[in-house]
Structure formats: C-alpha cells, structure tokens
Image 1 (cartoon, rainbow, N blue to C red):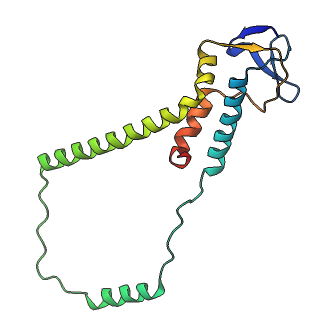
Image 2 (spheres, one colour; image 1 turned 135 degrees about the vertical axis):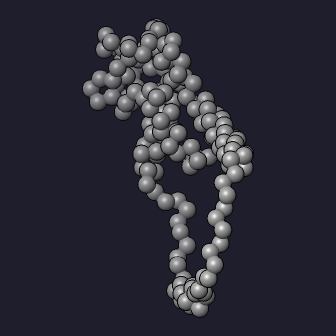
Image 3 (cartoon, rainbow, N blue to C red; image 1 turned 30 degrees about the horizontal axis):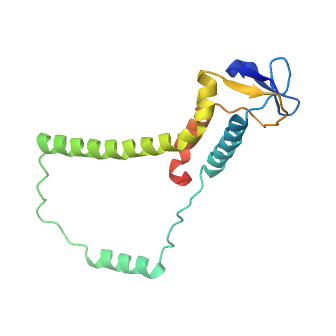
Length: 163
C-alpha cells in the first residue's frame, strides 16, 4: 500500500461518505477515522443533550404549601419603626467581589482542565488540521469530517455530562 501525506484541504467525502483525496482515490488513516467516529458521537450527544433535565425536580407538597400559607397569615405584624438601611461598605464589597472572582477562577480553571483532558483523545484531528497526516489507500466511509472547532464547541456544552 502506498502512503500519501494529506493536509486538511486535500481530504473530502465522495458519494455518500467515502473518504478520499482530491484525486478521488480512497484513503484511510485508522486513528483519524476512529477519532472522527468518536467526534460524531460526542457532537450528536451534545446536540441531543441540549435542554434535557438530568437531575429532575422534587414534587411540591400540598401540605407544605398549606403550612406556609398559615405561617405567613399568622405572622403578619405591623411595623411601627422601619429598620435602618444597610450602609454600603466599599471595602467589604470589594473583598466580597474579589473572593467571588477567585472562586469563579478556580471553578473555571477546573472546567478548562477537564475540557482539555477530554479533548486530548482528539489529538489526531488537531494534528491533521495543523500539519497533515499520512493516509493509506483503503476504502472507509464517514458521515462527515469534523473539525476540532466542532468537537470543542460540543464538549464545552456537555463536559459535565461526559464524565
């Protein structure tokens, strides 16, 4: 089998998904094809997961609602003197905002690490897009050629569901 080095623009799908070069000759790279099939799964999973509720919600209890109504009606009190309003403390607000920023940074950093870890399995697609890959003459069929951008967008949406 002869090997040929193909770059991103040299690859196409013909006649219902046969992977070929621009000369319409069939080509195959097993690692690339496996990554493409896995990318198709992840992207389809992300598309179907949109709008789904995987946690569900607890049903409301009628007795709890009745108790809440009774408690609200029996606890209505007249206010004779208004409570003083809270004085805005700029330093306290700045410290609180800084603490929240730090916590969000930690959470976002953890999420980015998780995304990058998951995307590592698509390294062959990234290498193909950046440098190109060697392909052999063989017949293989794909539904679509996915890019790292397609995969990254899908993974960002569902990383918490992917494990």
